[in-house]
Image 1 (cartoon, helix red, strand yellow):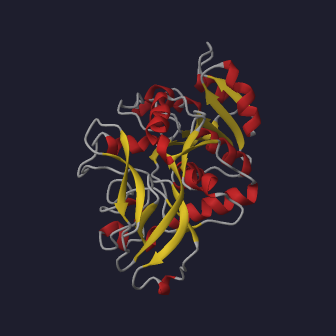
Image 2 (image 1 turned 180 degrees about the vertical axis):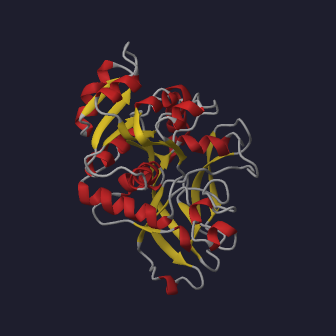
Length: 341
């Protein structure tokens, strides 16, 4: 009997522990992936703390997966996948195919969305069984450690920008310079936007410049963020990556006419935005989810083409608990990534 190792949380509130399990076989329409790297996302806390319905313990989180196909289930050959193919699986871990959004082709808002770590065991382990529609092909130009965070952090920022109304040359602001925001700035620059990075503290100005930002706004100064954006002509899009509703709300009046606030940072507190702020300049607010497997593949190909890589810190699976805690404290710069021998 062959086995593999996972980092699991056995009960609510418990630590990560390393256990061995029997290697599973993929069923019809599924593949078994030998995981080479898995990013640690703040959304993993939803499963570890059972904040979402249907979470059962033990939990093996991880929805930023990169690895190679080791075994094919029945019917996979028709999809064009082969053993040895490099693949990624992100927050989009498969769709039901029969709900109304799926029938309309809008798979990322599937009413029965499959998310690794929630619907099935995630990537905090050496093996993953995933449905074939969740697979994104990893280009040769990316290492597994660099590709893994693009399955969630990458695709969310990339898609949030490319599906916005901004066109090359438009002013685009990114609120936050963390795991999402540092990628958002890189993508905004590569897409040809005049890019503004917004964060707390003057010391982050140099980092914003290193990312390629054309402007930096320190949100702790006496000049309001909205006023700073208006002095630059008003933003066509504000990509809100910070998990802070107050910081997100502060940027709304910095939007120009028919500007769009794209919200991808999560905070349980409501946004402090009045209807008048939206009506007078015909502004819009849009919540943006992650992206399908094709979106993830597009993100990785764009990243490889433009030399965009996430800033990561790699740690072995044995240190999953320490890495998770580092992510929780905000000390990670900027993505903790588990790697496996």
